[in-house]
Length: 491
Image (cartoon, rainbow, N blue to C red; front, top):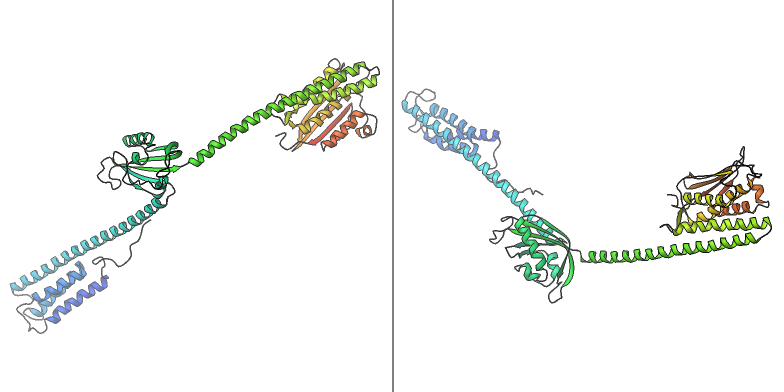
């Protein structure tokens, strides 16, 4: 931010070009001889008339032109002004004395005027530099004044042992509109906050360190005659050594105070914290309530399972008992979902890998053949599934495993039932149930047959917007269900 001074250079700072100065020296030597023309050579004063022209040449041209004029003048005075005329012979000792005096005068004058010229040039350069510095300082002063006056941050300058206001900007004055500050102490302006502010100011002054506060609570008035209120500020206290800024005889220096009121921000944050606390309390209450609902649904479904079991035990026909037991297993599979939901913090999704392992083991425990001659194996990747997908998927898994346990190994045969759940592609899940039993009819034929379980599987597959495939196997049956996972369920 350096200003370049304009205008012409000061006198003495300029110098004629060399050709002009040396040409002027020759002309002055010629003029000195022209002035002597009215005198009859030889003259009684052959040297004195040349001295003014030598001095003028040294004054205007400096060392080189002055020496040149001196040399030419000596030649002219000897050639035209001393006997014998028009020769350079000097027979009289007085001529030698005159030549020496004229030469010494020219050399000394040239040297003195050269030094004078250099001194004037140095003084002009120094003056020019000081002028440029003064312009720069003035520009910076105006910028600082503009920043001080128009800054949205409150700025004040304190002085003296009692911290008296020396300067305040409009933003600082606006902190207490109508209350005069300049010339008064901090305690006089803010009596309610003096107990908090003054110890900080003294500590900063004594230690000579910059101090910052964040969100200091102070009881301050907003104007004359108004009651004090709790207000929040961010303060910066900067000690200034004595002599940093003009102060009225203060040996302890000054204190720069920068303040920004953040009352509304702190109030908004306080309200936000209160709102968050209320939301957290409401969420906790809702979580407890939802868990209780899932627990009660699970209990109610357990009652239904028990009733279906009692009804199946009372039935005499095996076909009716199988139907009731199938319904009992379906209800139990749903009850297990609500049981897992009631024991987790996630109210909208379950760990289906853990659920599938528990359901398969539950079905194996109910079956009389599982464990003794039929092995059950579950291989599943960690997958979280929302409840809207989990319920139909659980029912499908229940139907396929129950079907394999009941029909894949007749006449006491043994084998293995494998269940796998994995991510087939981005956003896609694959559930597969396979056995190495006697096999069964294709799913497309079963859809139109009498198998209620497989018809339920087809309906639930459409509900999942998925596909059910029964790829050919060398031995046994394999069903593969592919469907989209809910958004974010398996992330």
